Length: 76
Image 1 (cartoon, one colour):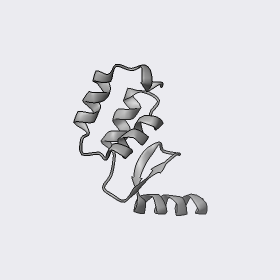
Image 2 (cartoon, rainbow, N blue to C red):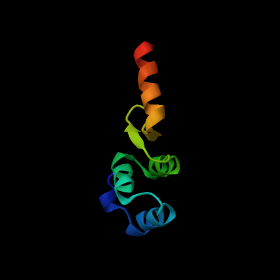
Image 3 (cartoon, rainbow, N blue to C red):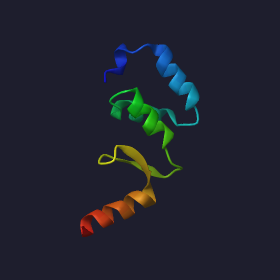
Image 4 (cartoon, rainbow, N blue to C red):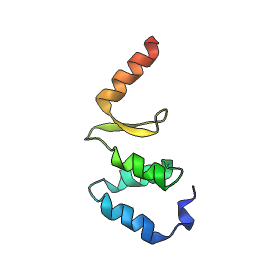
C-alpha cells in the first residue's frame, strides 16, 4: 500500500498509539505493511529488544525465537 497518499491523521493516530515503539521500527513496519490491518498486526506484536524482522512470517520476532525458528527450519 502506498502510505504516501494516506491521510496523515491516520498515521499520526498510529504514531500516538504506538509511541513506545522506536521511530525507526515504526518506519520499517510501515514500509513492510501492505495495508492498515498489516500495520496494526505488526505493531501490536513488536517484542522486547533484541528482535529482528522475519520475512516469512511478516512480523518482528525476538532474536532468540528467530534463531530457534531458523534452526528448526534447516532440520525440516
